[in-house]
Amino acid sequence: MPMTRVLLVEDEPAIAELVAINLRHAGFEVSIAADADTALAAVDRVLPDLVLLDWMLPGQSGLALAKGWRADPRTKVLPIIMLTARADETDKLAGLDGGADDYITKPFSPKELLARVRAVLRRKAPQALDEAVDVAGLVLDPATRRVTRVMDGRPFEAKVGPTEFRLLHFLMTHPERVHSRAQLLDRVWGDHVFIEERTVDVHIKRLREALTPLQCAHLVETVRGAGYRLAPRAMAPA
Ligand code: CA
Image (cartoon, rainbow, N blue to C red; front, top):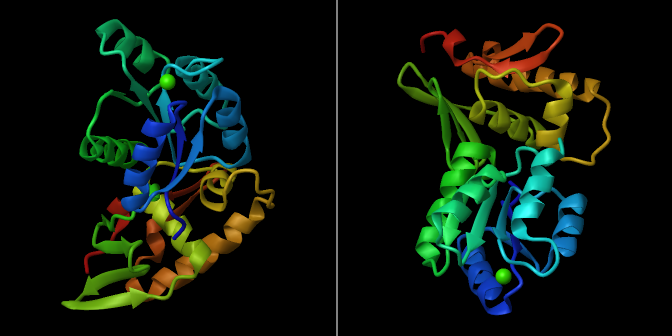
């Protein structure tokens, strides 16, 4: 699995270094932008899984950056945590209004930072975390790259290709919701990747074939005219 990418936008080198060391130690891939222009260019190039955004930056403020990303369809759901020295309640509200998902006041402990990062990812981008997902007994574990289900008291494993694994991971972390082919291409294949939409159908077919031995192929539903969804309620008893 690709590592979770965090973009850290912070102009104070000592703080940036400290935060980056802690995140890297926890297994995240971290890139640092010291100002708004560098941050904009970085997000334009590769969409990160989460942005840690300092409020006070040279040039455009962190708040203005957050507002701009929220207004762009490509970055609308980008998880953002604001970092700031301002403990003032009105600023905190402005930050959350401006589109931040959470807010951390400096100074903060590395432990608190990691807890907040994981909480926001769990809420907004669970597919970016390495945690095992269980949907009605079908278990996908990103750490071991296994897809398993216990049937008649015995564990069975599905043989799932890398693309189908990412596709299933995304669908399992966003169950019930209908995803269009374009959305799946964006979220699973990666943004800025130009692939025909019918490629999605090919991989959905392969995914269903891979899930057939676990009697779970029917979980991946086609929603006519709309796309695909994972429907846990349709699970047959093991
Ligand atoms: Ca600053």
